[in-house]
Image (cartoon, rainbow, N blue to C red):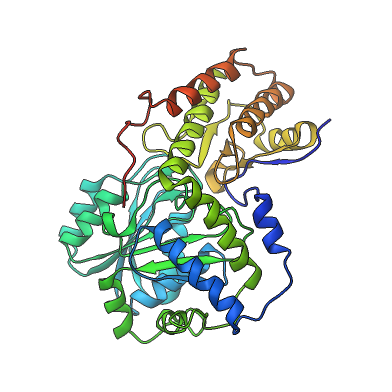
Length: 396
């Protein structure tokens, strides 16, 4: 028996009590002073979170809406963009680019691996028509962390815009926009920001704004110059998700009260916990070298029905895990450990994974897997070098 469902998916994620209470407040009008005051405070917090001096625009949409806004605002029809495809959401960039009428050049990498900066360098050197690079900071479908800082440097050298999907990275692992030279950084509300789905956030660099301002808006709804003009009055262009903005104010308070360095250290430690526990169970990790801090993708043994395993974990142990997508459907389990999740939740997730494996297939790993996982977590918090270099934290 269990008293609550533990949501350990890579979005949506659990909500802090302060956020849930903010979402339950009485409605206020989005063109009145009370809302403008909230927006002004939220904007300052978002700039700190993104590591930027530029405005961060809130859009009433999912993260895919922000991806669409970026493509339609920064590139004109028939222009070339390079898309890093290493998972489901890399492929989404390609679909959006084609819908816009762009000519996407696909740089494919195997699912579970990160793009190599030298491959991007070669692609840009060979094709001078490319105007932008579209990539995930964190590829949510595989748990891979792409080397965005290095990619941004290469893009600047070639005078190409770097557009980064930070939907499962912002508020989870370092990606300071200005310090890294990212031209467009975007995220969604339902992951590291500890909110329900429905809000997207996007910020542009100076050269991205210069590009955006000379193009005719490609979309009636996602009109970033119009959003920026309204934000000067602490409003949004269209009716916004008022209660999500109120919740965002509370989630930013939580994130920034701890400090981003503390948040990143916690996320790193949870990642070490999940990876050590999975390995102790005798399971193979999908992303071996460059891996996301907010989720851990675990390969299932041959013959294990991944869909059945997820059902057992939820119905018998009260733990909601995520499966794979497309070619990885039924072959991996994704353990989410981002946002309002702590070590106890992840230990419960590992236990549910182990017991569900036994129930589904009889597969069983080391009996001290929880102890090994907790030891890795404590070592990470203490600063003992593990899989991730101790100097990985980057201040904006």
